[in-house]
Length: 320
Image (cartoon, rainbow, N blue to C red; front, side, top):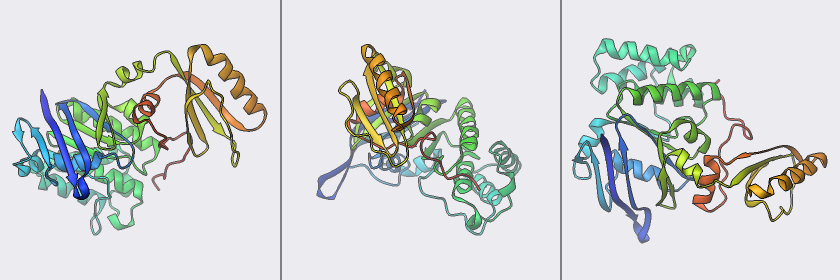
């Protein structure tokens, strides 16, 4: 059943700048739907319209068949939301903050208490349950904010970059909870620029770039568009410049020490020889060549270099 239906949304600001330009998409109950795009693509603007914080310039948004562009109170009633910015929880312990939001959303006291304990245990943040919010690290605060949104999830749970600053282990635990919430009937809208996370976590996704919806479908269907190509990924040695890349390396993208590109099936052997020579010359620390991923499809869609978050290249701020 379609829970969220967005039709040709336009959000225009002064000087006729369109943060969203005729975006249409739908999200089903029980589905994890990814909203993917680079920073500044218009993802958070779209979310703010879904939850009734911003009114569209034109177009319509319906939740459960109810037009929320003219009834934003209903959007706030049926949506639970983890914003991109840190939630203010100063003066409360982590446990108190989660429990308080659960009760504010209408949860029965005993249910909220049990669910708060379950989420804290499931995300392995027991050591911080009685710690006041102002002393928590960024990673723990993000996990507490997730619990606040998930303790009594609405029909639509919106997560805007929920794993920023969270360590890899607890990221995995968080995604297990997201899947459980969807399996229990809520729709989940995941907003992220982390392509690797999206590929592992979502049922369907949309790619937004510069306010436009450029593609949507399943991760598998998007990867199918890269058939006939292989992914090449190089990790450069520290403080080393690669210089010119060969013509057979298509759409090379630099992000720090990481270089990714693609090659045609017929050029794989050349790519292996080239990467091996760079490693022997101490230019490349390591390399891999394999099937194309959602990240490759993403780069083709957005059509420009975008430095993407990845655990392989750049350590995340860990929970402390």
